[in-house]
Image 1: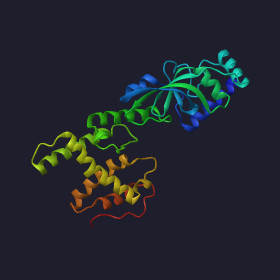
Image 2 (image 1 turned 90 degrees about the horizontal axis):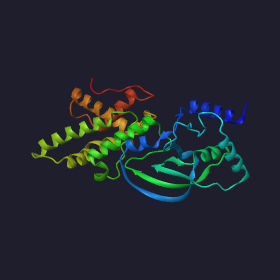
Image 3 (image 1 turned 60 degrees about the horizontal axis):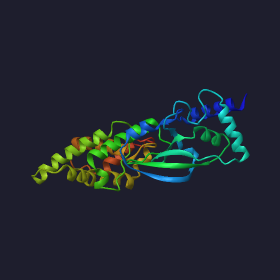
Image 4 (image 1 turned 120 degrees about the vertical axis):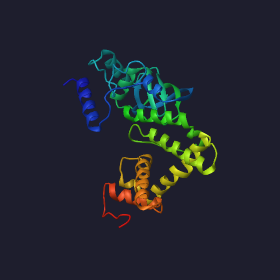
Length: 279
């Protein structure tokens, strides 16, 4: 089997086994999903090739391993020969979002470097700074979830009110639930204080009095270990609903830690002998 076909076959098999996307991520699509706070020119630097996962304008021409989708390329083979001879090639041009890089110019040079086993490549880099973390390993679904996170932050300004916050879900549609929780918290806070509570104040109060106490309980009880692959934010939504159910059934004396332990024991992967509130 010709070497180029062998490389393409191995790359596709590995992509299938690892469940990695087989296509490059489009730069414009990723940039449009999240809020870009600023951009800056980073200049010439060495970039880890594994973090180059997308393209500015040729994402249909190459797969995720930067192999031409239309079959062997004479240009690629010439660049491979040049790479093996140690010739100095001009740096590629990359755009960076978070920890992911997108090729603006130099797709075949990236392909040649990857096929020759290089870990790094010289690149001229322009960085676009997102308001949420973007990783080179993110799938399109994970980027959509982060787009919802970006919209949530734009609406609540929680990243400005509480700079240390980090609320990450593994499923779409969950930030809408947080917005509902904030609205409910704002309503009852207004009743408690007999005044109109500004939205920013309600957001900070929800985070300090509702979200963080539950997350601190997860950490103290190690509840997240019962739900591998999930996040504290996932568990917050589930446990807060479970807490509401328990208090409706057994009264307001049900505490956070008891509710969290009960939820983990009922629905965690190990499901040890259950204990229950009430008779």
